[in-house]
Image (cartoon, rainbow, N blue to C red; front, top):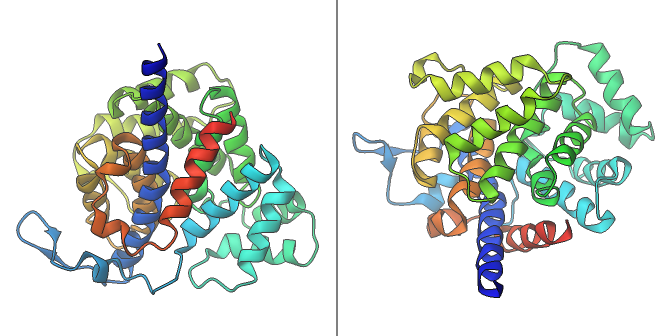
Length: 312
């Protein structure tokens, strides 16, 4: 029994570290794809010889989705749970460093928070000013919740929604975070991707408050194999569907990320979320070493991942 428990713990740590490392790699890859600094060679669109160059990450720089993920993870660890005010304080510190790719919605919320306004009032004020705004800013950073709450699907749903509300109050955003994290939890437990999505759908089916648009997009990703039917944008439902599609229609980390990068022009968030999903599915060892090398925060992310799954 001890040997089995040890093996299970090692597998969980490998998957958790893969999730956060994969997120960071996807974030950097998405930045490269979005800025047109990534080249493909061959009919299969494989990477050229210099993956580090193509990841287009300045030395010492952390991509913005990764930076927010670290803010959330650090707060979860220090508070041993989700305390929105503490999380927002970390985001404000990051915002005041003037990150160059911060989303407009997130920027508006954090500007108000930096001026002393209550976090919930800040988020609601920005949402009310543009009720249709439902970007992917909270989805790209939500994975640490899955690691912390992996033993409780109910907590995963509630904390994912609350972590989204810190900046993105729209129901589409809240439930996209919850659904993605439910899938990650299944993957952390060794469930294969197709079954992981099915299980997440089954969990949500018992919730009367679930956002049905999120569920329909998840089902669409699972059923349809034609990538031409996908829409690439920063809209959170597009990002969720495309990321799930890349996970479900490939068989390894590298293929999932390359599929995400080839979907279109606005794939930054899609690559980030796909990286988290595929990293959880296939583990840290599945990520090509030369993709990890340019990411300065990889060691920190691996350590954070192990700590988070150990708290619950």
